[in-house]
Image (cartoon, rainbow, N blue to C red; front, side, top):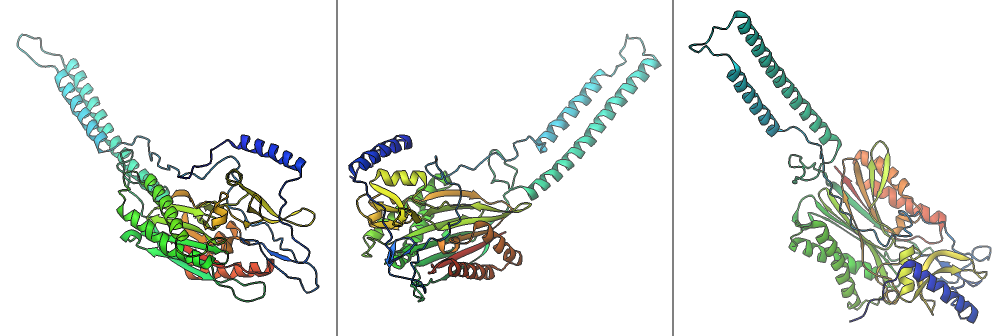
Length: 480
């Protein structure tokens, strides 16, 4: 059994690394970052593939593209996006119900009985009551009956007002499923009503169309239920990246669906789905390593979203991404995944702890070029520009893992649509631009048109910004 690396605090880790670096500097044994020579062109995709290239003027062309629009905050002090227990008591304020009305009716009966008991009786041997006394008691009784009448009218008014308030709340707010804390609240029917996907291949720097290394899976009636959906985008990289992505596209959904069908997850659904995701990702990677596909320097990122009617679970490894477009007084982005980049604080700490290093390419003057990459400590391999993926055997030896980060999301009426896409979309298009564009098509109910627009816009952005075009894949789902 392989022992896990001991866990130490980030502060101690970086203190020891700084000390080690100073000692190495003194001994002149520090490993240098890969240097771009004057006669090569670097393609800044996932792996640092080096090939000779010059522009029309014969000058060196170095790929130093714009910074990619980031997803979420750079979590400097958080280890992972944890599965959040989002259940909260809905409508904890006490509201009058039929039971309260029955209690009020009982109180009225008791009051009537008390009035009757207090009325004067003419018994033998007693002095006859005067007209003044009798009139006083009649007035008292009349006041008490009037009080009951007013109280009854007020109760009916309160009940009507309460029903109107409940109706307004149901229209404005999403109510959780029936539970002990909210037994009289019904669940709004929020779910995916339609979905569409599109994938186009990229282009090499020579102008030739490349093999599409992206793959996707879109399943309606996932687990046999009408409103349950499965959405997955995998983005391959390396020589055999297309084979890895295709393998993941076939194997991973089968594992997840089998586990979902067999699991009694209604007892603790969040924990069960969390375990299903992690076990299914791990099994898929183990099968990949024994599949015969050469994954020495090849792998794939993957983002999965399962929609159980109004509850979404997103599991992600790598830099494919899932977001929601929400309209609540204004259009907003809701992120369902976080990109896994090697220079994120705790991703980098894990890589360094397991014997790797994180550095970008550098020019001859030592200036960094392109994204941060994962390298072995004593070799300039593999140069992977992400910290989590399937496959990538060499990178997995120095801290690149296939364990997904999982986020749960409960749909609100203001959630309008879901976008799941490979980094071919996100490299030059921001989250905000994407949801603004899709929203115009959402208003028309045109998921196909939205997919066509996004893939074309991403392709044009790549043509403006780079010498190559990455594969582009997007899945759109509309909510109702």
